[in-house]
Image (tube, rainbow, N blue to C red):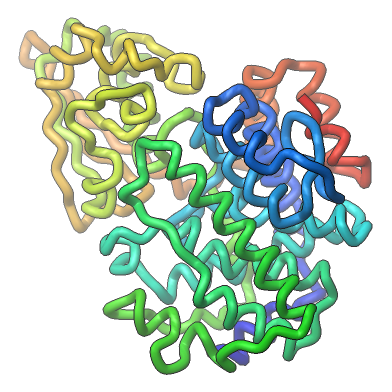
Length: 421
């Protein structure tokens, strides 16, 4: 399987449809990074890496590539508003694009090369994430940081021009570096996991280029990453199709595991003109995978609200914007009306419900039963997806700036300049 992974790292005939999605991810990632500059965790990371170097840091200034990747991965995940891939079970752009762009700036690569490096790294991360499987995630590992670190290593390695042998070493080194735990969810440690993935990728690729050695197969070999981090690993997916094209973009500023419910309840509210006060009870069926992630019953902070089905359901039916990060204040976690509404929500894990689905029913105070369902896997046409991401960007960073960034992500403009706050 290591040989198959190394074969993937050498892919050059990349489909235009996958490249188009990768450019959308570049745009969305940069929007999330610019929007996250004002977050407290961003100030901490910017101060931590302050200095000079070849790579730009979100908000201004430069740092060495590894440090910039650490900061930019963390900053861009600060709002938890970035893309998700459910096969990978994690966020791709925030762990891989910071590595690709930092190394790209260091070596003078153009935007097209950075996008291709990201795309190949993301595809590898997805397939490694699928090998590790849901068991890895359920044990408490954050695949954004674990499988994502291998993707970041590959992206950085391609831009450094690593040979096949050097890429093997880099992946072996990454196997002893990749880390990240779900116990950090709801804290600043969660976005830091994305930064760790990106910085690990740059570091491991750079060390391999410098002549370091490592285990010949640190991923699948004896006592390698898969053997030590997964109880029931899956087989390597050898399909030629790009699994990356199933990436999902966040249109709500909260955990992606809650988005199917949000979309479903939003439709119920619109179609039935249903305010929160007319709801007697909601029964939600969701994938068991999400119960340990986004079913915080009593959130203490605005960050924890993003991982609470009960609070988010109340926000939807109360008309509080889930798409705006400004909604998720610490005061919201103490809101008396939402606290009362949360008592009406019953969340059940159902193995028959996919991780991109939500099913359930709303019971009104007059006894009416309204059934709901939504599946995020239903692909939007590209033009609709572009329009949705542009609208999201307009709200986060302003119309003029979003337009400039859109143009930059589609061409070979200086992306570093556009990362200035």
